[in-house]
Image 1: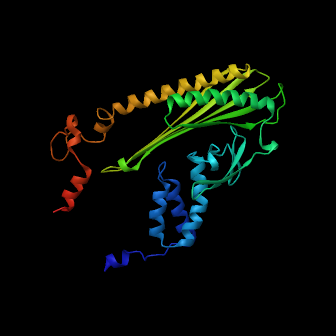
Image 2: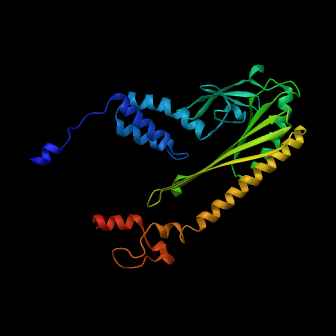
Image 3: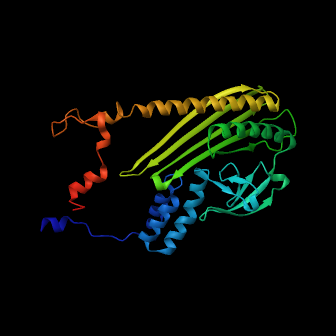
Length: 308
């Protein structure tokens, strides 16, 4: 009787609550997996209106935060969807080709392109620095990231006509390796803000790196590593600035990747051991030298009596 009194009555979630929950699942989907989440979410909700509104709000945020790359029609090139290239909610500038891509966020496709207007493009003075840096970053990305994409956008002072004013360029590097058939997906995202300070003749460089990986064969393991960097160099000619910035980016990203490899190579010896007691309830030491003998799926099936 007491148990019946303690039970709370079931309350139906409101429209807004269901929408916010749906958005949370979409926004937290690992790299390259939002469409899989969306498909299952649509089936679970059984409410077309809730799903459509959640998708319309979540997909643009997800696409920009993951900096997805879309192919433009007629092989006009590729555009990176990001807050740095955003002109309107569905329009994104590709500074390399001086074109604006019109994007369908939910379908994750570029529907058409148009030439960029003069006011959407940087001045000739800024373009000299942007173009030189873009060339150096393209060279670096092609050497370091298979299928990686990059862009250089001007986010401040794009109308500057010559020396005497500050301006800011942003380098975007994005790379994905999606292999759902092998139960693993991964992404690399880096954003480098370069503040060209004319008075001090210094370039202030700030970088943000984010590495994601999702492994879901016989389990569910996700990596989300982030790192901030700060550096500087002197204000020089466009070509010399581009080379100096590219070398700084290369140095920090290579160093960070090497540190990740070292950290995760030590997981079996350090981190994994810390997750368990020295002697578990069974009083038997865990065989760290041969962890491959354990299968999450096999153990669950055994406990639940499945597969018999």
